[in-house]
Length: 121
Length: 396
Image (tube, rainbow over all chains, first blue to last red; front, side):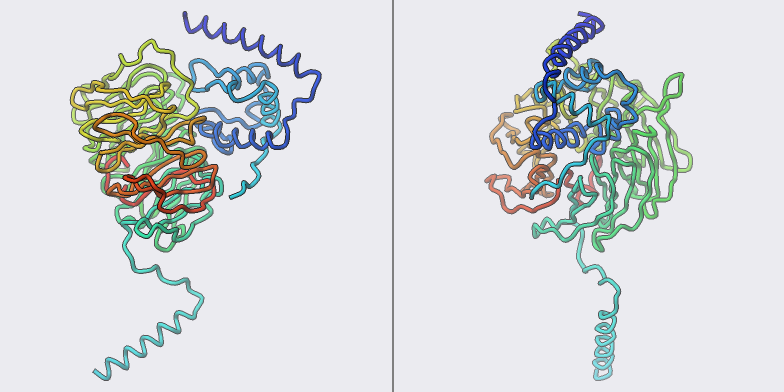
């Protein structure tokens, strides 16, 4: 299979998954519980931070600050979070995130990502 | 004799008086061979540690964004050069535990190296892409080599910087797919040779003799090998056939190659996109074994005597550490020393290993024969651990 075709299939699949997710999320707020929100903030800052930087200023991966993301299509960004981006090191995070959580993370990124609360020693 | 005693008494009194003044105490008279640094990545601090007594001597703060921070040491082991993600380079006096010099040298940086003669510190930068060289005593800028490539004059992210004999430095250009070797023996006029390497080199290492530079490739199978004794022969792709055609697994954190792992005469490497450690014969550059491990390896580190190889892992397996026996080439011990084990560092002769568990805010010291925990410290979100013995090793 050519990489191009593979890419297209991934994209079509991603859009389908997104539409389904949108339909599911439309009747309920996607906001995670406070505990889960803390865990997601930690995940983004520390583990996404491996490539994007703990302050999300970029690294091997691009910066994820509000200014960088503002003009990008939301569907494509969500697909990238959930399914990765073929041809780049960006891996799929769907095994660890629901679509609603990915959507919430994207909201936080666009609005200025929260800092982590101090964690108990 | 009596006069001598009086002089001594006077000097003692003067010393006591001086001790009452507000000057900070002079650094303790001690060696530096058993010192080390632990990065507290979230708080912009480093802890200065003593590996003989397994203690934290103190901390130095104000170092900025230390995610992906790394450290190299001056040859005397007294001064640490800390490279921050935010592009800051800081020179820290480990004995006085204070910052002596600090420069904001780039917008985004991931590490650096120090020259063979100890006089030049070089930073590798993502933004703006390239390397920059600084005077190791003053951090005064000496030279810059922008990683410009292609017709549009873009600058590539620089990865895998390694010090080479002759005040040269090798590094790889992630976006350009090249390996560059820059000679800084005359820092005012750097001279750079460029070699095609392959798709998306993500890190590199130099072998302990300084002869081979090896860059891992994300975008294709195999590694790019440059023989620095015969660089005119160009880059050779090695280990291409292994795992070819296999579906690659997602990589949630890039493996690190820096700090070669030589053991039992072989080079031990983290595979990428495969949950394996690869064992490579450095004469033939053929694989001799692939060892299944618990996840995507990040650091593959040989105990200094080479009898064991310790491996940590990328998310979501980053709570595990595995120990490979270099003779049987199999995992002989699996440990769970804490949540999010980011790094490990052996004592110079290997009897103890220090491991950082980021999400438990803990550094543990483990005996490498019995695997029992000897002590542990509370350090805020610890990541890299660097001992001053690195100062004497090529490629560290």
